[in-house]
Length: 147
Image (cartoon, rainbow, N blue to C red; front, side):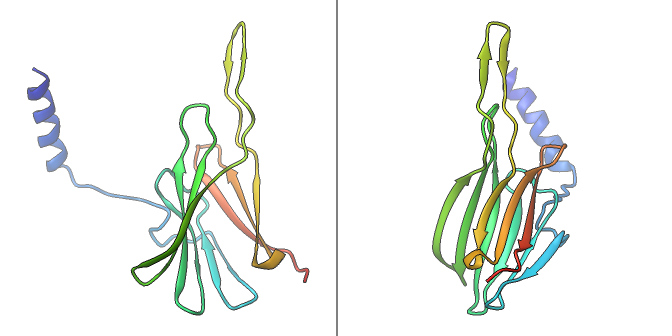
């Protein structure tokens, strides 16, 4: 019975047109120019596995920042990948600040995402990560104006 149901679902999914709307669909929330001429751009609604922001460097390198999403009651994760052409230079993940989970006799209370700020370009640009009310992330580049 389960195979039959899965077969029907698979056939229906194959017949339906697929439309993917992601942060990397060309909709740019903001752009910023770094001191070395690099250009950063970000999206204001970034869901799980979406490309949330990019930085394009003058030497051809690109830094892509993806949302890894968040498990129930857990903080969001961002994944950073710097590449040059098809070669990966480095990659790492960063946990976004989050309130601790609170348990009591009446149940568990999940924390909330807290604004997380990363310092870039030797302190000249900050990247702030915020959670939107719909559960997506918003990445904002802010030039500090200080040297």
